[in-house]
Amino acid sequence: MSKLKNISLVLLVIFYLLAGANHFRDAASYIKIIPNYLLYPTVLNILAGFFEILFAMMLIFYKTRSLAAWGIILMLIAFLPVHISMIGDAPLRLGRIVVTPLMAWIRLIILQPLLILWAWWYRLVD
Image (cartoon, rainbow, N blue to C red; front, side, top):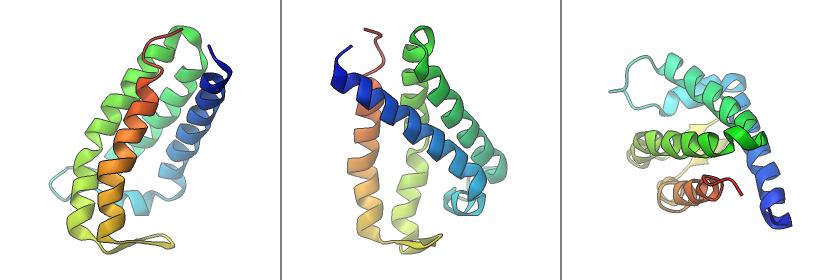
């Protein structure tokens, strides 16, 4: 694996560990953005945090890296309704951040695809 890909992998692991932990640290912000038509938002938030941490840890190990990458990709696709809903709900305050409609659009059409591509890079183990 190239040095760039190794550094990227470490950053990806750290990113999902922190993101997953944040689901527990600031649960109210995540629950607030879950669309009303999805049942059990507290459970969904806990599951999202749990799986982000689990997939981050699975990325560390060669034997589970591909499965973790596919899990992250599927999870990010499953999160799309949240990001679509945020566009209609914006502006909204999440902690100290005010999410504007433009920020919500950028998150949906730029950030999510980039995160999916980042995980896609690890779907095949070198």
